[in-house]
Image 1 (tube, rainbow, N blue to C red):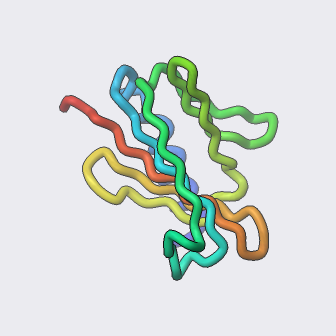
Image 2: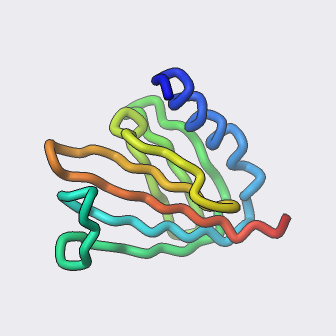
Length: 113
């Protein structure tokens, strides 16, 4: 896939995210140093749940943000090296933060339709 198509998929995701407003949203975040081995000993995982109330693109810093009550989560747009829809209402972003430091963000919307 070329870069323009890849960027358009991400843009389309955020242009249509408003349909998930009010939905329970699960974000599973993993930090790892080896994308080929997500062994629990090599990866740190966090889980957050909230009802999505707002999303935006923060041009200052190139961030994609999602917000819920008492929850704020950002994805660095200029660090995304992977994006895919992994299931119905499930998405995964991979960001590269260093030579071998990756953040995996798995988003699941409990969407009623």
